[in-house]
Length: 451
Image (cartoon, rainbow, N blue to C red):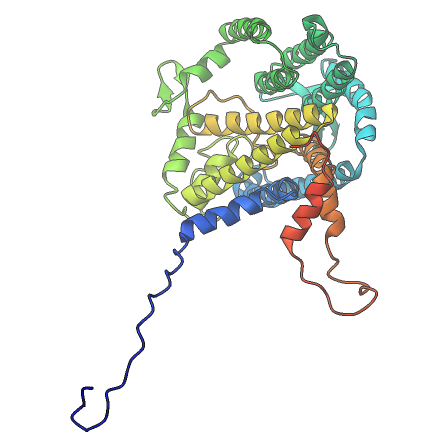
């Protein structure tokens, strides 16, 4: 036996065990993506997106209306906050309508479809009576309510078409009549064309385009075949070309697409070009709230149709992208509500409202960016105008009601623990709120046909 230098036997060391393999480190980006997707798939995601997105758009719109309208008000010898106060009053009334619509049952929404349609048609016909209707910027689409208050009935025509069209298609689907093209078109298309005719009598091409988009959205949701779409689209396109060709003003607006000079040939592109100037001078973070230069008389309709340009000048690219992201979130939530429901009326109404808001936002932003002709439509929930704000907020209330009516969302809302109030019976210790548990309960309460 070998002996060490100290005379002691060497220490016998145990054989080293092989190290256990370390678990592979999870990719942080993959973990973040998984968490985000899990949060995105929660039952209340659409509800919070609609509620939060619409409120943020409205509040930011109030701020920008105050900033963009001050110079215009002072030029008219009015207080600087004149347009802001009117918009704030409309937002408060609209908030009441939103809350009422979000708490109404679906049956009451369907019951309101015909009264709203009849009221909208009556008011739109009343506009054409001399002495009652009034012209604003060349369009005969307004009724004076006394003083400085006016109403544009065509804005309520959008809400009327959505509710009435959704109720009509839902009843026909219950009777299995939508497989026949005549039941899909009649009386939906004739009534929509009647509304379009009343709008075009006043010369409002922009609102007519939005109404046409709503009609096509309802037909697409109803499963209209391609040849039917082509037929209706051909008729609408033919009428649109005739209306544009016969109006020098509309032809001039087409010539201003992509214009870089205020005078582009025979067309006066002052508004379109100065909208681009406002966006270009904003930079990444803008010149600062209230520091717009274009609103000092250079940019017409700075607080209405071209408020997005002032937003780009004062808040920069970051501000415009934020507004765009809010509208994208609102549109996604509306599509999600329409796609997850089993109620045909909810699907048609949610799809119609989503088509209305997103199409109007795209047309307004496209005109400001110089990509589309100036249609004269406001940015939903953002631009100045009570007639546009009130029906839009009621429509957002519809989406909120439909999002709350989802079975999984109802279960999730019922499982939420109150932050204040009475304590639970049986102890003061509060159990942790685990979303996975809630999600399992919510999924178990879903109907078999729900996605």
